[in-house]
Amino acid sequence: MNKYSRLILALEERIQEGEFSQGKKLPSIRDLALMYDCSKSTVIRAYEEMEKRHLIYSIPQSGYYVVQRKSKNDNSLLQDNKESVLDFASSAPDKHVFPYVDFQHCINKAIDAYQDDLFTYGTLKGLPSLIQVLQKHLDGYQVFAKRDQIVVTSGVQQALAILVSMPFPSGRDTIVIEQPGYFLLIEMLNTLKIPVIGIPRNEEGIDLEKLEGIFASGKIKFFYTMPRFHNPLGTSLTMTQKQEIARLAYKYDVYIVEDDYLADLESDSKADPIYAYASSPHVIYLKSYSKILFPGLRVGVAVLPPLLIDTFSRFKVILDIDTSTLSQAALEIYMKSGMFERHRERIKASYNKKIEQLNEALTRNSDHELFAVAPHNRCVHTIVPLPRKLSFDTLRLALKKRNIIVDSTENYYLAGGYTEKTLRLNVSNVPHTSIATGIGIIRQEIDRLNISR
Image (cartoon, rainbow, N blue to C red; front, side, top):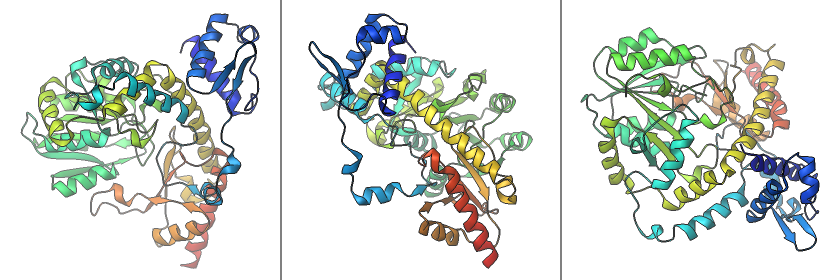
């Protein structure tokens, strides 16, 4: 991150923390340069960028001031009640961390810059200027791809729908998925009546010998996996496991569909995707930008092996002609300006606090046999087993009365595969100061209802 971007991030944090309150005058250019040991030109550039994004405003011969925001007291009682609910079920990004003003600025600029493109159907693979930006961005995750391999999609969900529907060079039709696995993919496979095989995954990973046996059957089209921050487990595969999966894919001519949906929240610089270990073009890399920004953006990216590019592009046109040009253009401007990088650092810091609080809460309750076996992750979600005789619906309704929303992992399994009941806990939308309280209430209700059975 360059100097002026770091300065903007530092100033934004001080504004959010109230040190520079609304309407208050900011330090002079000279004072800020001394304070952060940078040049005056760096400060000027940072102030100009913040002014463009309506975070601050300038008064000639006076200085720069923080823009007044709508008071929280203007919110309705209904909104206050909503915010008092602790939602451990939602996996959407934290709306309180999202930079609405920043992105609104990018959308306005996108409308001006791409107004002619808004009246056309765009291109087969996405906005060329965005693909150029994405190529550089993917390099940072050890996903080195040529531009013609990159296709912009309407989220990862669309990419999966295309891959499930299109023919592959091998002519095979059976898909392997992890158990538990992505519930919307399971629903898609069931609806389309696609042959599917489930392979168990736990905190230790996947039984690679069993996976090889499935691959060796000669009927597998592709294996869908979430190597990083698996949902709902929250765990990640080891480097050795990822290398072995890449080797097996090449050996048995099976494609790997790697869903790296939370790549932007990775803090381990040595955690590379399977794509980085593949010695042959057998890995299809998918990444979403909805999880770090907002679901309504509907922009994802697919990095495809050369043999699949033409077929994938044809099927994409059949499904929706093109991904929203406005969303693509706004994302391009957001990334080029450095705003995306600053937001990523901000949301990583916010989520790291929540991850730390979640793991501390699990440790604090480790005297309880159920919480003792819950995985401690580098991710915002984990699972907790439930007593066999306790109905999840009974627990859900009891917790709802106490303003706690939870979800089970039942929908993450193929039919008949959900044998051990587990609770899925996600803290992305729970304030970090309330995580321990929420976990404590969940424990209380589990014990109360289990005793009463």
